[in-house]
Amino acid sequence: MADGYFISPKDAAQIEMLTGVHRRTMGTTDEVMFCEFFLERDSSVPPHSHKNDQVGYVIFGALEMTVGGETRICNPGDSYAIPGGIVHSARAIVDSLVVDAFSPPRDDYRTEAR
Image (cartoon, one colour):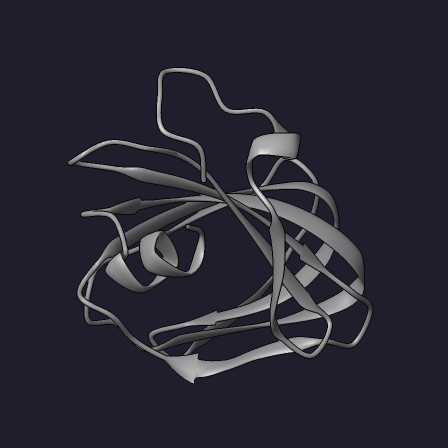
């Protein structure tokens, strides 16, 4: 991730963090981090939790999201809010692009991006 006020995709390498799940860490401050996730069809993020609040928005595609034991299909224009400590997972029904904000920023994503 590039340091500074403006970040373009060329400044932020895409990382395949899981098979078929690609993350680009974009703008980050001391309080919030913005990431882009491209999930290939049938790829998944297994159940997990972290201390960070996570809020996301589906740009295209469709995801089966499970948050705190509740499962929904999220389509373009849908968003989700996951408080820190809540177990959640995702599965891409089709190729999907989402953007997520994390607060506080995820240290593991910050380190991997440099």
